[in-house]
Length: 308
Image (cartoon, rainbow, N blue to C red):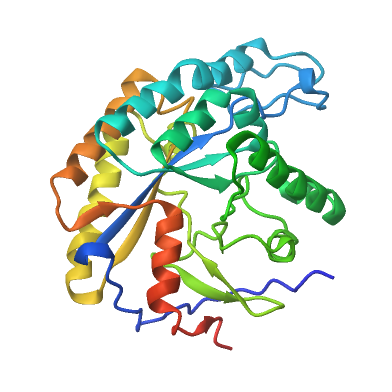
């Protein structure tokens, strides 16, 4: 039975907890490298359509292979992801990789890079498909299959979860039912983690963000050039840093996709953002898993939301 999903318009309200991050940092930035290439919708894979989230919508009829979009996705796995990993390595940034299980299976070198540098995994589905289109039983099957495939390819399971676009009404129940998840990252409704009520008790939510996300290069209103993305992210970091002086620590999620920010011009935006944070002692990069563990270890006394 699905637990009814309500809405919480209050959250912490005017009394947000005074959070302090490791080392006394005021802002924790979680950089998410999104890796989906090879798991998107494709008639070659037996799907009834092709995915339109390559670089542009070619309007190819659903039953015909879209070779243009296919090659845009391939750019992410062949070139883009390695441009981003070089930047991440250069600035010694701990990152979270939001990868589908099939994408990692098709490019094991990405999984090897993750293991070598101890970057954490955010579960992102068996394939890059919308969970809200699936039955509860099919979503459960894919979730379990994804966890098993992550173990096989990466050597470990995900401890957090983030669905494509948005979850189904069953997703939260199913990740709780699966039993191995430490946190959920589907909601985009706060600047701080919080504990959410579940059928069995509670689960930590580490909120995601669609605002500081390079998908806005392809949607309107969006980013006209890489400087827009860099300026947007840096402005958010600066404001949160100032706000946190009186109101306690904040977190910010920045998401970059291999096929989008992996392009040379857009990678310059990530480089600008990395340089900006490097010059701010009170702002740190943290893996999503470390944010979750820090919050559980230090703020487990906070009330479970919603309060009503």
